Image 1 (cartoon, rainbow, N blue to C red):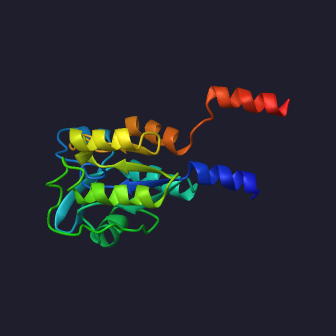
Image 2: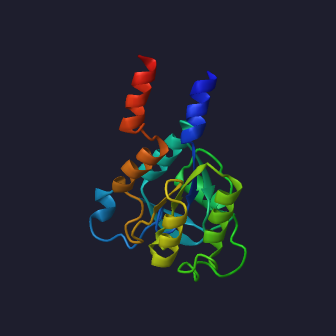
Length: 196
């Protein structure tokens, strides 16, 4: 692989901070929705999970194409590796940021107190110039969402699926665009002029 190709790949590489409940596992799933969405049910850590294999396949494909790295950022902590990855059918094993205390998501509305917000902000500070995607239903908390949106515009894409729906096709396009950005029209014209 040439240096130019690897530099382009590195520039578009994204770290995905991935939650479980409300993202992969969403409920209640009532009526014909389970059939319509081709959902599966599995038991993990004494819970029944409702998930769509299509989401797992989509995320796995991004990893296999080396567009993203996944990092678990969930109250499931180490159970992401022992329960979620094997039961939902992930092909890889991914790093985990453990929940440091028993606060769970009680402080989701306060970016300075929520353990997940602190973890993402620390990663962004430690990786200047790199981009991240944070997928968590608790990002629906306005104060946290706005704090990160304003401070990390362009570097961080946040997706807050509706808890009862989870990650869906409408989010796939956002993720694809963020993980594989197209050159801006002006930049493309500039490249054409330089090459002419």
